[in-house]
Each structure stands twice: as C-alpha cells, then as structure tokens.
Length: 281
Image (cartoon, rainbow, N blue to C red; front, side):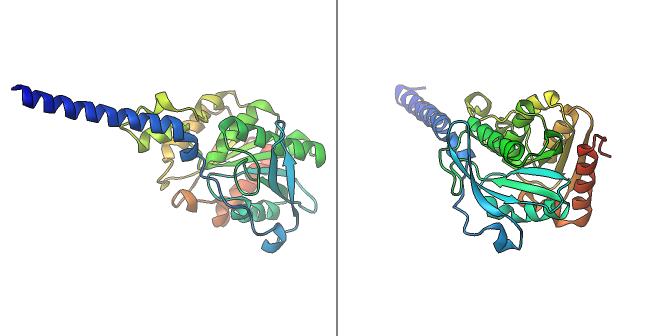
C-alpha cells in the first residue's frame, strides 16, 4: 500500500471515528429531549368530554406545579392514578378516565413537569416526584386509604409507576405497553450506538419489579411495534405473585384496554380482586 492510499484510508477511518464520537456525544447530551416528547397544554376539561370533575393544580415536593384532571366516581370503589405515556397531555387520556369512571373508580390524571400546562423541565427523577404528588393528593386531600388506590402506568408512565410502588404503599399496579427499560428500547432502535453505556434516563422496570410488593397486572399487544411483547413477558416473569398478563391487540398507541369490552372487563375484575386482597386470575 503506497503512502497516498494509506493517508486516504487513515483519513476515512478518522472521519468515521469522529462522526461516531459525535453521534455518541449527541445521544448523551440530547437524550432527555429524545425520551420526553412533551405535549401542548390541554384546551378542554373533563366536562367537555361528558365527564364529571375538574382541572386542578398539584404541587410536588420540589415545588413544581403540575396540571391535573380529577374525575370522581359517585360511590367510588377506589381510586386510579393515571400516569400517561410520552407525548400529548391529560385530555388525550380522557377515555382512560371514562373507562375507570364506568368501572366505579375515581380517577386522577396528571401531566408530567414540562408537559401540557405543568411547569418545570422533564427528568426521570422529576417524573418520580410528579407521581408521588398525585399519590399524595389521593391520600391526603381525597382521603383514600393506600389499599384503595391503583396506579396505572401507560408506556413511559410505567417507569414512574414502578418506582412509586417502591416508595409508597398502594393496592395494585397496572402497566400498559410498558418496557423493561429505556436502554433496552434504545438499543433496539440504535443498535450501532452504545446505548446501554450512554443512557442517563433508565426507567429500570425489569430490575425493580422483583421488589414491588403489590399485585401487578400487565396489558400488552403482540403487535406493539415500539415495545415488543417480549418486554411484557419478561416483566411478568420478574414480578412477584399475584400477577397476570392481559394480551391486547393493535399497534403501540392503538392497544388501549378500553377499546374492547373484554379487555375492560378483565381490568375491572382484576382491580376488584387486587383491591380486595385476592389474586388476579
């Protein structure tokens, strides 16, 4: 190999290495913006969707103001704290509130810091504090006993839901379309980058679930294109009993439990069993 060819090869290799290093640096710096898509402020209230209730603001322990919807049941069988997934806001989850309301549960939905009309900048630890604020509102302001509360985590919201189960007592944990961890999802979409080594946002659900002390219900579609069904199977294997998995259908955003009566019925039955100390079937 002559010197000119050698110089060209070295230049190409150096350029490739530089581009790869730049991509790694960009992932390290911008990952919170990649993970947390945010959403615009809500333009409606529960009443605009034919639901009872109101919009309100909660305060977190680090003094961040969160926008939330409260949809009360007339004679509540319990309460559900809805921790929504990435993008959008609480009004995009109005049908979740409707479904839980029809099942007889008071529902509290909140927007993460940095989402909708909530203040602040979204971080992993910040979402944990946000979930805690929602829980504390149900316990302190609405006087629900911890055993009457179920926490519903949708997709990304499953991360704060799992962490909340380690920090606070409550009756049941429901995870819909939730992943084993953010690095596991990232490695699937960016296999050419060292995602696991660079990840600062982790939501290590698989690692945490064996320490979650309450019943767990998983909802997941075999057709999920973002979070494969294998994630649900791994989470189910890791969770302590009692635990169960309801298989839904459709793409990631189309596999909502309220879209089919049999899924909604299964969730209602599981909630009733879980909140009354019985194992889900």
